[in-house]
Image (cartoon, rainbow, N blue to C red; front, side, top):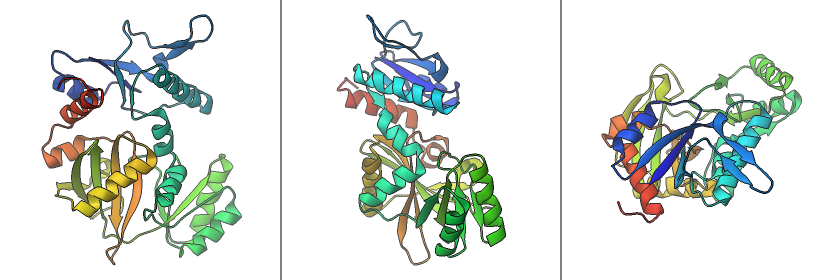
Length: 290
């Protein structure tokens, strides 16, 4: 089996996948920038690889201009249409990376999410700031690993932040801050398998492992497992990192579904070879011998 790993640059996850692969599995890295297309007598997607892969695993989202990103995602969709299974599917990746759309679909599926307002001008954004209680988290619609998150509790600071976003052509995404004692949960769902860890950071309300949070494995309840799987299905992912948060009253909300989840922290916490789990899941999905 030949699996193409698509990303922006080779990283640690690529090496762990290669280490987990057996003799029957070849892992090739394909930079997004190497993907190209033909349209005409011979139409299709090319990647510089001699052989078309049996499957693709996306390990990094496209970077660049809007035109480049749309083109690269369209290439992925055309590759899928030509019969190459993509993990996760191009449509699922597009939904997962868009915080507004993914949150809307989660709520449509009946799942609890934090109260959120999204607007395109400062006046509407400030009305949302007041409606959400004057304690909000401003997030980029596209982003991850805690980058660009700002907690705002003062009107003038909110005005400046919203104005700065609008000035660069951005969308203002405001989410009600949920007091959770600087902790949350990440459930990594790989098909039917679920790994779970608590994350806490006494020095920062952001609980991302990349920002220094302490990560500890725990056995999730059936209710949490069901919630994570329902969230993943609402977004359309086959592999996902689902972030859950509980308030002081014990209510649990879905914060985010990450379609290209990192696994270093949860692998260390759970002492599980995640790369091996991913390869086994891909082979099982493709009905190959394990």
